[in-house]
Amino acid sequence: MATALLIIIYIAFIGLGIPDSLFGTAWPAIYSELELPIAFGSFVTIIISCGTVLSSVISSKIISRLGTNKVSAYSTLLTALALLGFSFAPNLWVMCFWAIILGVGAGAIDVALNNYVAIHYSATHMSFLHCFYGVGVSVSPYILSLVIAGNFGWRGGYRIAFAIQLIITLLLFLSLPLWRKAHGGENESAENTHKDLSFGSVLKIPGVKMMCSLFIASCAIECTCGGWGSTFLVEYKHLPAEKAAQIIMIYYIGMTLGRFLSGVLAAKLHSWKIIKLGQIVLGLALLLLILPGGVYLCALGMFLIGLGNGPLFPNFNYLTPENFGSDISQSVIGIQMASAYIGIMVAPALCGLLGQVFGMVIFPFYLILFYAIMIPVTVHIKTVLKRNAK
Image 1 (cartoon, rainbow, N blue to C red):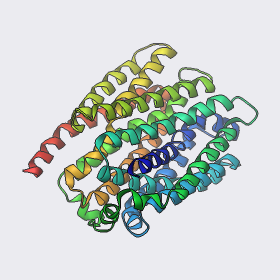
Image 2: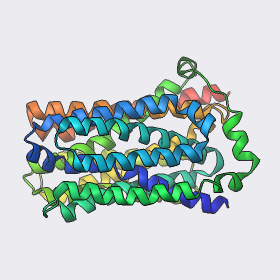
Image 3: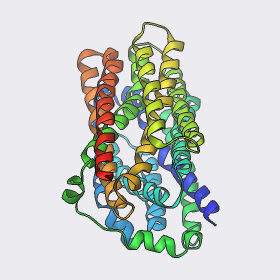
Image 4: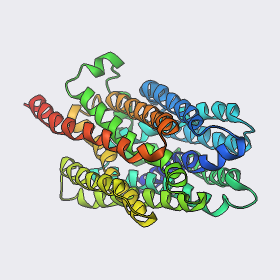
């Protein structure tokens, strides 16, 4: 039963990933059709992120009341409806409305499944979980690359994504009874006896703020690449939209592969070792991206960014019970997810504004800034956590 449930959770994470790469990849076509400035895409991404931050902060109480299974099913349904709404949106304001629904749904399922897997499964399973998220975010650019130049354009891509999301939603509703059978009383005790700490109490725990900053930096790099990588390739490298979508797909394939390899390595290496390896690859990839070169060098750089940054998020999450205790991990993960979505909200939006003013030439240097924040914080927090353990 536990294995069957794990497969369902993996599929749910594919559904979580599908919307995340869709808007950024489609944006060059959207702003051309609706005659909008490039930077206006930030309005939609900010609203999505606000919804996820709010949902993440209050998710601990909702999960305690409804359970992980129902929260996952209803949240996926919300994201499916939002994708359908996007496909019919006649203007930016309608998109902004559906962005709220999309953000609220995504935040709740993210916290619910991350905490569940961190408690009930191994580090390998956590990395594989986010590997399947990578499958989801890789599927969207691929779908768009096939249809964006056709009669249905970007709207057709959104409708295909809605159909996939709806199938995943139905699967989650059909699997609701499986959750109780999979872990028996362990499932109930993990969700009903945890300590539900307040926002302020969680932030006072030594090391939590630094972990939050790591989530912000990693997610800023991930989502800026996904949100503005296509625009960088179209506006600065002068590639056609369908070619840019293919390269963004390669970026997400790199992220998926990085998380898969992380899952394999987790059998022999501790999560902090995997994080170190990922950060080394990420640093080399960012240097590649600023070198002068053609489309193939850009594709390689984007692939390696995904490969290096991909393992960081799942390993940061998996370490939460170890770092702070399983009894409060759900509350801590909720704050960490909120921090992650602050990075997702602010970083791509600021990149869009800077790109509007200075041009998308700033894209690789902007990513390097977050990497420069990430490395010293990683070194310092390991010292803090060792002190806490003693």
